[in-house]
Length: 326
Ligand code: DGY
Image 1 (tube, helix red, strand yellow):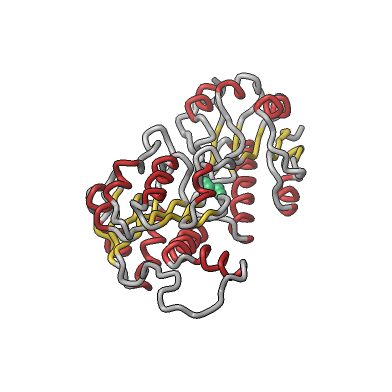
Image 2 (cartoon, rainbow, N blue to C red):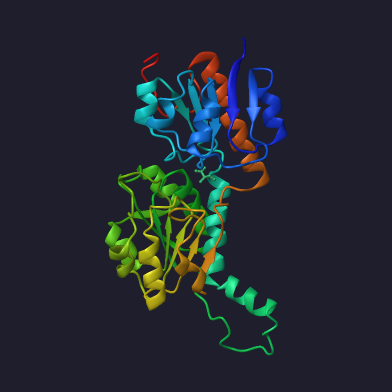
């Protein structure tokens, strides 16, 4: 008998076609975000789930889904999955590392350039038919070339962001909980500095660390207070790493020049202050959203799920310590 699985959000038809020979698939192609109750109800008789950051997999859910063996996230981030609870219930959890680094780094650069050069303000102005003459001092922005780029987190995505900075002949500083290996530092031409120094010196700070209890508000009022008045802050990592209220406060006071944000605390709701500020470029968590990359992410999650159910050994296992059969 085939394992029953649930694909929790809309995916590409090719992904469902890949899964079909292996599993009995129930798919949510209407793309409704299920409540915790609805999700527990659907997963009660399933062996596997393909999830996204909108599905919370925790003790309360797992205790109601006794057949569940694998939860495969269509994301590299997995703060929606409680790994300790998965371990306790013998559930394998996987993510999708590697396939979205370039695309996400590209988007961080889109935010850097748009924020530094005030592209959203300029576009709103021209669309509002306000452009009546060329002006020397129109939308004066921040030069990206030869600026100091400060990267918080020199992981896979942070490294790609750093390598892209060479084209702009920038000085790259980084901070991370652990210093990167010398060969990574030299490939990225990035210099390790204490966090405070990075915030003080950088013209552009960009955040690339995952969200966890430890990284909650890793960038907040004390860090933003160190930034130059002319500097900008970019965030395309995960809501909660940045203290959004502290950023709104800093932008309102003109303590920094602007921000480019793809992720938010409590998204899809956003801090109401962002809506009132002109010097913020906002996007709805789309940094990895190129056609090819979102397809690869969904396919990777499907491959993880098939392998998890067939062999118990999926390629991107997050919790090898899982107590199988517990
Ligand atoms: C990820 O992969 O974690 C992204 O945030 C989802 O797009």
